[in-house]
Image (cartoon, rainbow, N blue to C red; front, side):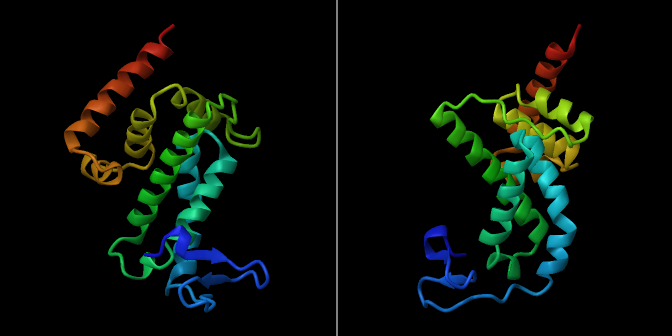
Length: 175
């Protein structure tokens, strides 16, 4: 897989250019359109719950598709590969926000389902790893092993983060 430094967008043609060869690489892997159509919206929802911002979520998902483009042709499970890329992109977003110490409330747009907005607001109060585990478990319906694979941690860590996250949610939601 090429890194960001190895590929860039050519502003003159609007096409992708491989910096190694300088050739345009407009051909996408077979089945890409179907994969995009099928997975884009669920991945945006996942990223929105992880980041608390629909606009950021859309960017993260778009980046995941673009940067994963070459790998999508050879990976065994493209949907899982993209989900991992989206979770990692969401984690990077939070890392950048924390480092910049920007504490502004991006939130979800008013047009988003009120229940999703309320859930995202509550989840935003959790640490990022607890939030990621809970969203992947209860929204994306992944198993503990799949979550461990996405977050690159042990299944026991997933159980612990899930337990702590749920306990913290209970404490915050009690009257």
